[in-house]
Image (tube, rainbow, N blue to C red; front, side, top):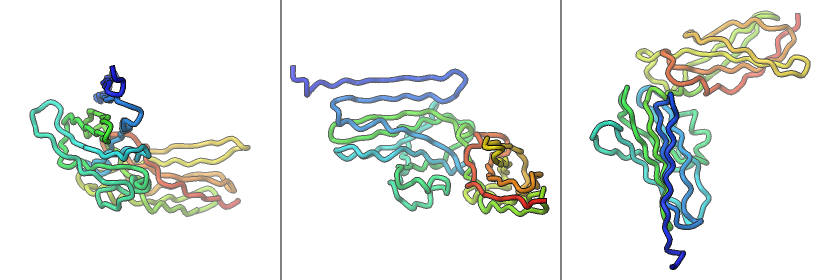
Length: 246
């Protein structure tokens, strides 16, 4: 038998109890030059229709191309093409939170998604040797992740009071219909030991903090969908402030 012609298909199925997501990784293995299985992450930065998936660019040879499709999981609806955005692109489909890393990532934009609907997305890497696929199931409500708030500003009102003000992420365009709420995180060191405090969530875009005179703090803000969909994980860049001494 000629081992060079041997073709093996490996399928890994993972179902996590208590989660709606179903991840299926399928690799067709012919040689060491087979494209790597795309490590795909999906999120919705502008509810309900600013949804992107991303995966790292590969340095493998021969060059890899991608096929990206999605469809409703429990219906006979037609399969749609996910609009591919190459690494380094300045496409308007990229949210501000993802564009910072677009030089190393492929993206695809999913349009016309509906609420309370289970979707399957299939990202297949292809080169002349073979193909590898990542197949994932998700619901839009489970991947809501607003971009970080912008224009975070801090101003001491006294040696113990600090006003923090910010603006909503510009990629969240439906504030009247889908309001946001916010969390505040501030960090400091106490005798060399890192300390942190979280406040919120609340709907206002400003808050007054009671802090210690003379101490230096790092302040960050994170946005959440009002109904609590998704997680608060996209924090703004930290703003450093040293409080006046008494």
